[in-house]
Length: 451
Image 1 (tube, rainbow, N blue to C red):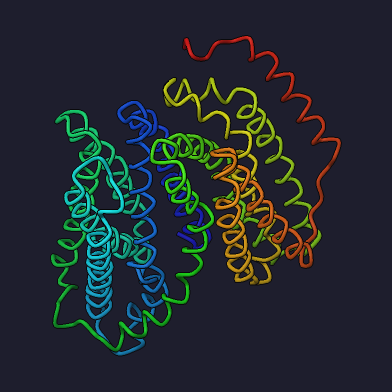
Image 2: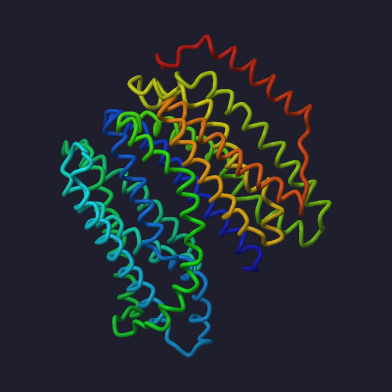
């Protein structure tokens, strides 16, 4: 098989994984929203967001180092056996995961009197600690399949990982009637099963020995991975910090309503953007290398037109039919979340279009600018949340998100245009808006809540 064909085949497989993972969100979302009350769903999202934030640090960037250093060991260029690579990466991720989990539990135990989760706090803290450790391990273990170019095995494992989480959570939360705690028990179980299975594979291949752990190599891996952590943490701050501000001023139920609106918008926009994000980057980089600026610009303008053709109807649908969509997907008890949809769908869709609008930054290797811009936008979002939420409630949080992402989008476009200027066809945009408005008018007479 030629190199080009191998790259194409693996890209298609990874695309299948990404889309399958997105679809899993559409499966779990209606289940969790019907199982949990708005207050419980708010607490659930606060915990999920906290786990995500902890994991950005507990991974210590080692999942990136896995990809960077594999070829050196596989080719034998550094004179060390491949078992040093596997053993050091695995033990390093275990140490980092345990450190941040213990730190979190210690801090949470000290301050637990200042918050109430409505469920067993000690049980949840233990589950969170286990999940963070396992996520840290799995970020490295699953990356091993990628660097080994085992795309099919990676696909199978990813589906077991994602859909196994849903199945186990349903079993404990609904089947065994454990409620929200059952959701985290299910996740902890599947994360542990995946980690144990991957470790067993390395042991069976005789590529994992504790004595082959190398502190020198771990330092080298951390020196590569840790500087990349701000990229992930900056995205987290921009996307999720507002949940905690809402919790401070309005309580968990308000977080639940806001999270329903945000998550539903995110699922649809990600599904819209996934085919573009997965396919066009290697395509426009290839066009750039072979045909230069003019053909690349022409291609990206065409992609942008197709993206807007799909994005504008999505924005209109969420703006005019948001309440019906929430009733259909999340249930009528979350209908109040519809007020934030028009303000959330625009920034989330704009963010999904980064692959197109930010192409110039990627081509000229200026992606570090995006990290700086994301930190700026995150700071704007936090400041506006503290300013607007006390006065305007959830609407204030949604408007803060809209302004923050507009800042990020504007900074990205201004910078990217210095390297590659794209253009939008005004007539096409007006046509898409007009067609979308007609579609909304026709659909407005239907009662989705009775479907």
